[in-house]
Length: 369
Image (cartoon, rainbow, N blue to C red; front, side, top):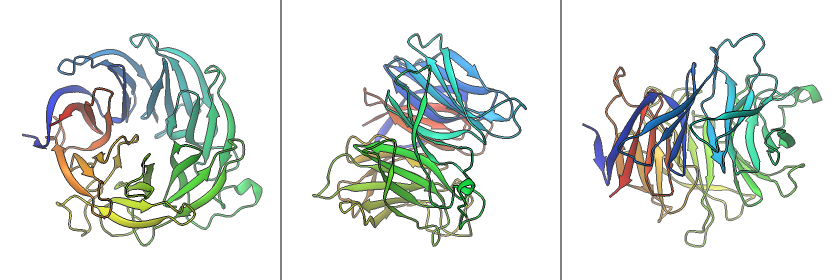
């Protein structure tokens, strides 16, 4: 039986394992981890009886594991995940989902290298992590989708050392420092940079993004940084950033990934001052996927749902940010055919329902008690 505290399960939908789930107007969009599964669309207006409306496939050697929608437009990433067809190029796809049961391709934006990894989308601008000609690893890119049929790259930023075509030399191995996930609040992008920690970027002029500050804690900590999520309100007069490291790989043997609490009141000097780890983990080395993956991307209150891989979903109260504490949890049973759960993404819709997506199979629909 699932372990549940402070939440109850109201529905479960069987589907291929996924990387991201987003829900708009009772319609769930799932980006899948592995081809041929690309993007699935489900009607979850009745959370007890989810029904598949449509599915988009991807070719072998690629995946489309991230998805965002806004006002009838769906954007999905296209990324190399193995050996793709010779003529295939990564990037992202744009679809008309005004009728969710009949998604219509609008266009593809294509690039060199592995393509687009993760991104956010506000209905006009896409803030993503594409690979670009002349750069090593993913960089931060801003795209204007005012005309969805003609996405335009209007600005980008790279960590010094990435622009090898410009004569720069990276001080790290391979693509260890690369853009992972930009999230916008106001005129700032809070951007995780994998084993380069996180950076804060000024986008007042989107054509000329500017570095504000950053913090790299790998080493001494072994796990790459997944998300830097700004809290859109002050707590105790302070501005707070939640930063999640991701337990998918370790540079060296060390503790499982956890969640950082960072004070960015003085944004040019970010200060990590607290952290949270689930009580089951004592800090000793563990297999990958034991620790943190990511919190919810959009914060609306001091209770923060977070996907914690093998340890399910944890809801963390940051009302006292120096002492974050778990107030609810849902640890699913292992999906059929697997040894353990692998909670990968969490989303809360406008009804307050919580959607917990497993990396291996299916998603749970929960509600807070």
